[in-house]
Amino acid sequence: METNQKLKYERPVIKQLNTGVTNKFGPQMGFMPHTHIDGIAVKDLINTYGSPLFVLSERTIRQTYQEAFSAFANRYPNVQFAWSYKTNYMNAVCNIFHQEGAWAEVVSRFEYEKALKNGVPGDKIIFNGPDKTTDDHMVAVQNNSPIHIDHLDELYSLMAVSQKLGKRPKVAIRVNMDTGVQPIWDRFGFNYESGQAWDAILKIIQTDRMDLVGLHCHIGTFMLSTNAYAVATAKMADLALNIKRQFGIDIQYLDLGGGFASRNTLKGTYLNGADVAPSFHEYAEQICSTLIRAGFRSEELPLLILETGRALIDDAGFMLGTVLANKRLSDGRRATIMDFGVNLLFTAFWYEHTISPAQECSQYTEDTVLYGPLCMNIDVVRESIRLPLLNKGDQVVVHRVGAYNMTQWMQFISLRPNIVLIDTDGQPHLIRKAETVEYLTQLESTPAHLSAFDL
Ligand SMILES: *Cc1c(COP(=O)(O)O)cnc(C)c1O
View 1 (cartoon, helix red, strand yellow):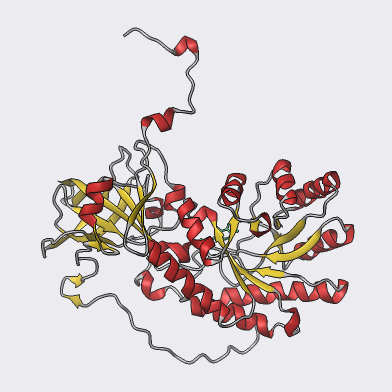
View 2: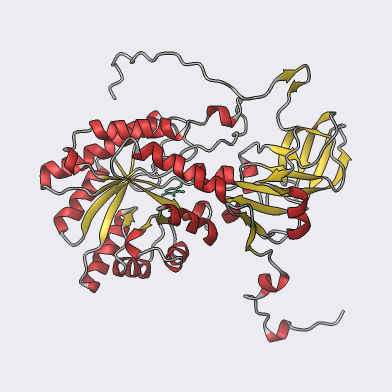
């Protein structure tokens, strides 16, 4: 966009903010007890499966997916989602998305293997990321998987693989660009503005050893600007149209990546996340209308691929936990210690998660520091949250934890708990068992001279 252009008039809009009625003590968010998830009592879930516990709602996953898919499919004729494995790679979760029609999007060999084992055909596994070995390339080429090239060294390595196998890899390049959002994500892929991306495209087409089938970008994560997607779509379309013009090659797909915001509240933001996150319709409108206007002939409109992760799964995940203790800090603040911390709730580092008591509770509230159970100072779930006075043994529900927690969790100090999926009939299923010491140590071996000691 030119900077000296007159800005377009945008009509003002009025949007309802659901932050709750404010009383003289402040907004009343989060005090309503959350006693059930999809019809099952929180206390029954904890009695059966223990605390802490992750719970996923199959109904919410499917509803969210269908809402996202139709937002795009109603605006563009040719849409495909690919489930971002790193966002949540529990097989049960992946298979819900595959049943809904999503392909797989992976960024490592082990995710790739997981997708294959789940039964995703090789040509429907998109292989992204900067870390692919020669062996990874060999397997992906043999399975006919679209490989998204991140840097020139990967391009050269893939050239060698194609020669060795006598097979033409199906490739796309990852493109990075200025979308008007700072900081610019230029770490992955080839830059658009500098001509790097075009240069890579020329190398692929002119050496003629692989098929350039697509163009890929993933412009950021938790992107609150929908306009950034219009900018990205225009730049991707520009590359595809230039390829058509110069070489007569039809680019089969444009993959706009993921990055849509979920309805969590980012730390340090004033408004509730549920009020500021754009809807799927707002993202879809920017992407689809840009693409339709870009200048493709209608029979040549490329397939639009989306790799949305967190916005599809965050709402469907809950963390259930129990109060271990209350205490007063030296400055008088109330502190509550929970049985889950940043070991399980990695996203607590950047979100102010909504947390509700799971039983009837006191109407009195107090600003509270919410600590996890780890013997480590950074284990803070919420630095300051207004909560009813909870007692030892009381249970809580943490909302919107479906994305990135069940993959970024760690075994530091405590082991990982059970994960339960509640199906669309309201039946719970254990989809991953709590870890045990045997599980943790099964890959260890102790050298003979260290096997015994006297104390
Ligand atoms: C992580 C990732 C995604 C998913 O991102 P979200 O922000 O969760 O939507 C999609 N594509 C690629 C290449 C990624 O690395």
